[in-house]
Image (tube, rainbow, N blue to C red):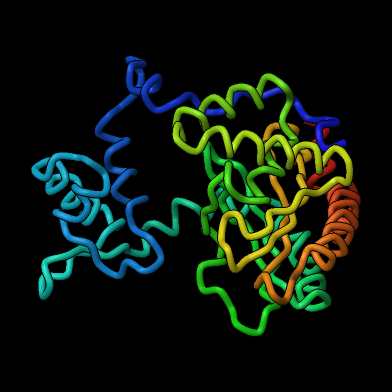
Length: 280
């Protein structure tokens, strides 16, 4: 069901293959790696910490952080000798988010579902071996500060990621599964069984669940949502604390997510901007 209407695409090439390509610019990749090294709880990072996280030589890190600060993507705190992210990073994502209709159309329906289920609802898009949040709606009493736009989840270990894998064509699945195997050699036998089970769940019910296997305190259900442009895979999820959201409740949330997908798909086809884009 989830595969219908999607154009066949190829996942991003593994890092080693990209680096061997003569078109690959290592300096640019290193600069972006520094920006991606900052996590939610990191107020400040020094050159030594950045070198450890990115495995980039410290002298190179020093030149890159200086350059990024000059361009407005980092800000240097002289009082502590460390860097923090600067507002310039927001400009990188805004044009992308601004032209994405799905989050805008989906948000009111996500808020309604979050309130009705007392759960957190998210919309993510596959990016390599991760899923990145494009939108969210928090319905639990105790909010998770991480579940915001830009929040990243592992593709292989979460319901959201496995729903994305389930929506892929066979060739795409084979390639992404090989990348997951290379990235997780020790855990691969278990991960493969779990991913295969999630794919079977999606084929059978339209959604898949992860019950405490990514985070022992969290249960989540997810539904794939191939983007109307046919080139990207998204997924909606719903869940929260395991004691509040047992599998029986998640099944009801899965049915609600399927209805949400139908509602959003219908709204997108009726949106003038989306219709015009589809004719190009």
